Amino acid sequence: MEFKLRYGYVVSGAVIGLVLLVSAVLTLPDGKLHLVFCNVGQGDGAYVRFPDGHDMVVDGGPDASILTCLGRHMPFWDKTIDIVVSTHPQADHMNGLLPIFDRYTVGKVMRSDVDVPTQGYKGLLERIKKKSVPVEYVTTGDQVSVGSTTLSVVWPSEQQMAKAKNSSFVTSLVRNEMSDKNVLGIEAPPGDVNDYAVVFRLSYGEFDALFTGDADARVEADYDERVLAERHIEVLKVPHHGSRTGMTDEFLDLVRPDVAIISVGKNNYGHPTAEILSRLAIVKSKVLRTDKDGDIEIVSDGRSFTVSSKRNN
Image 1 (cartoon, one colour):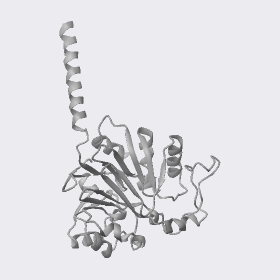
Image 2 (image 1 turned 60 degrees about the vertical axis):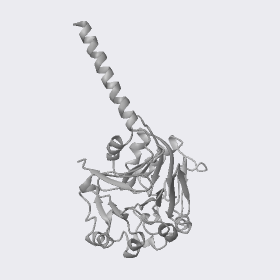
Image 3 (image 1 turned 90 degrees about the horizontal axis):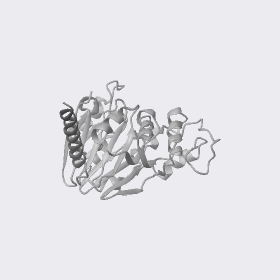
Image 4 (image 1 turned 90 degrees about the vertical axis):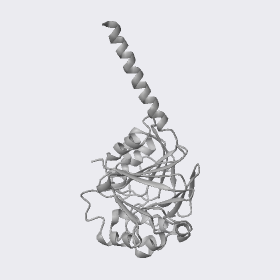
């Protein structure tokens, strides 16, 4: 009996080890780009795995739900996220980043240099500072290369950021020159904080995706149209959850995406609006929604791409 019991332990251990080995092999870099638009409820959160195995999170949604998405789509052994992009500091995009910093090692943060006087934002800055994570403030024209993939920043422009700089709002706990005694500002920047959201094009081979955060139609006329027009956009993350003011006919006529992803929750404040869905239909974009389709994954080899979704609620 003792021999059989020990033998059973050995067999069980071997099976577990084999399963882990197979899982590790299957999650090795496959030379393809993986974009996962996570079902995080009423908010935005996306996971990107680059062809060389590096990865990136773009926003984190309103709570810790994104951790479940990362658990499904990241290799189980990977505890590092190379880039975190915080498009703008609003709760439905930012709060889910806090548990990411608690659970993972983050290589660097990309963001626009605008701040808000909220406890969630303060908590994010404290985590960035405590873990000494480098911060890269980006504006129109900046490019970041990750292997064979390029991130091209479309917005915000330096002129746009100057509007915030000229207000008394600008404070930051992550800058080295500022002391621990500094507190968050008490004024909002001119206009809406959405107007300062990071918008960027991700390019891999002939494939392009446009991440728009909550940038609104108020600022789209000031985008660098050369960046948008020089390459066809296969995938669009629809601005501001499909809000009526999220994008204009002119913008859609310029980008004409094959696939439009709307990140939205069940309690969605009327998002996406019928007006936006009608505009997407006119340009013949295939529309997928996280509230109906769950996690949405785009996989590209740089020439073609596939789309899959899996309900997770």
